[in-house]
Image (cartoon, rainbow, N blue to C red; front, side, top):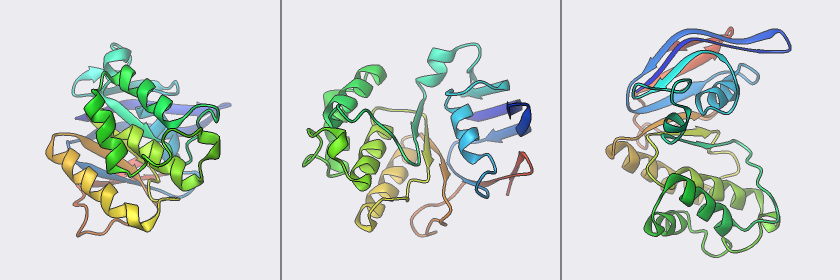
Length: 208
């Protein structure tokens, strides 16, 4: 499903990541590592947000060769998302809906799934951190992405929303989607059955 070959990333001449090879099958993958180990950098590389050396492909579609087709397969929710405060949540959802060519039913479903109808028409600048988190997760699940990247999804997410998250992940996996999730907190085994654990350390990765 996801294949990385000879991936390198440096900032100001300092090597951050040097991954000779990483192949992940369809499923749920927990990306672990200490603060500053390069987890978020790797997520941004995989999502196609920052330049790097090497090759990345999802379902044999290569980012370098087919960047548009590659990015259409991915959804990414950042740990602490930042959205333009003057926009409403509805406007952001409709923008992503158009880009992903999702249906109105898809948009309505994520609004209902995350119980955000009460504030979705308000400007984002009025949102609490928990509201922003729910909006970012609703956006992540909008449409039918093949790979959903969740960077610290449990941060600022209220406890009552955790069952929603776990159920949506399970539902999407049954539909053929995959997840790469960073989290400092372990996932309850009763909620999510992990396919692999990937440790980021010493500028590279190791599948556990």
